[in-house]
Length: 85
Image 1 (cartoon, rainbow, N blue to C red):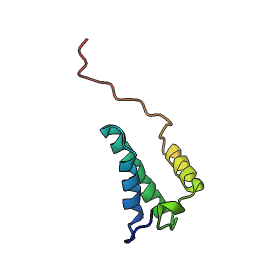
Image 2 (cartoon, rainbow, N blue to C red):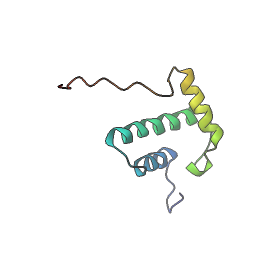
Image 3 (cartoon, rainbow, N blue to C red):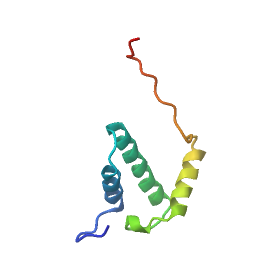
Image 4 (cartoon, rainbow, N blue to C red):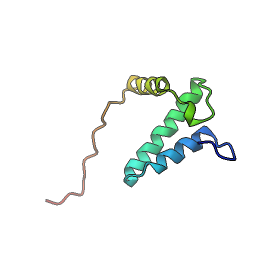
């Protein structure tokens, strides 16, 4: 992922999140996840400069941290209010 100029880790994560495509809502959720992951890495003093340095254990610890915060594996979908039957 290295190019001529060094990009910040958060910019690299955001770029990958956008490249993954998907619906607008999916892309937005993915962006939120990478923002939280970048913040988690910074707060826990995990010093990496490139996304190629991210190890599986960092992601596993991030997921465990999110579970401790009360986030479930699947969040319930919001009920659609404007449905006409």
